[in-house]
Image 1 (cartoon, one colour):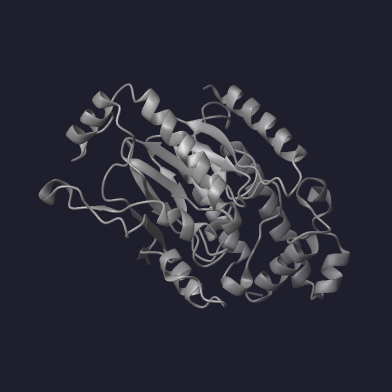
Image 2: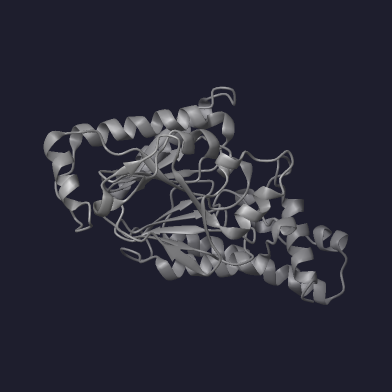
Length: 347
């Protein structure tokens, strides 16, 4: 599918979603590139890799949407089973087994990995139900495919996500917690998955202190979580270690990964935590906006202006028509206050 068709498809899906009442709660499938898909409507955007190795999801959406997410995943699994693949692009240890799957049209393997980008419930709420629907494979060629029906899909996240989840009240069920964590700048899956390398990247102190971005290296797609939300001002969760400077550095990190096709358009595709499918230009425009507002508020702080005085100066005014909000869970006032308090710490 060409990029213009992808954009058209997303526009149509977005229009359809806007016409649904909040109670309808539909989940829409947007083809992104190769075996990568974007699920819209489950809370935060969900990225899905589906193929002959199984299914990998980046985030799981709201708990109440888990059944509809699973239904969308099953639809993609069925399409993969019917259509098969035209060529194997990888030489992993499962190559011979995958050849047999393709030749016999057996169903693709189940959900095997879930990656949580951060701790907020609109991104981890479906962990319990979706992980339970999956399966962990162990043993490889050494001992055959050892499986245990009681062991669901593996859940990967930065260790701060696990730390935060363990402090949640009421407690989050054990089966919904990450099974594998990392604490460094990133990690990668130990082997190709669905024909490509998958790399987890940790931008420190950005949206939260436990953010993970996921880079699908073969498909050239980056799933960012909430460090990039092109439909609203950045949500800086200061209580969980977020900062304005960390958001800007994370956006620059995304730009380091992206390669445009022509004049910053096309090329690497970026799946945000919320909002529309994007490319390097979208990220660059957003980064510039955040940087300009950061600089404006920092200049006002250096004049010893109070938070109320900074709000009265309207440092976001020329961007409010695109990103601002006066109601909802993240308003313009809340954003200005988060930036002010984040910068005041380093005054």
